[in-house]
Image (cartoon, rainbow, N blue to C red):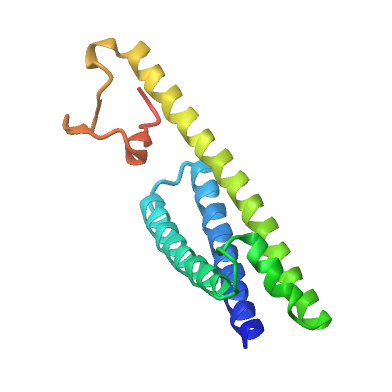
Length: 160
């Protein structure tokens, strides 16, 4: 019973990690191609999936805390795995290790993307401060209305 519950949760988490990876790729491509149309929608979808992932992670930790003397961390997983027959243990540990590795890759990729976006925003803001000091660091729409400094404000006219 514990094996099936844990396996189900880990496989669902793996599926969510793959969905997050796909969305991160869409966001990366949007940034590289300067396609800001669905940018906020991608971030909203990403937030929903991350919330779902966090809920599953909580479920998994609750499952692990059902093991006597355990607190719900990764050592709890291995305590659970040691109680299983060798074939089930091998299957579960393979899924768990794969999930952890993919999560780490995803985290590094996401941090690199966010670092790139932050640097590009800073470079763009610096350019406008130097090129147009009279604007005081503000960005305006074509109609003269100030806009916030979020990703939508990075859409530039191709001519000055």
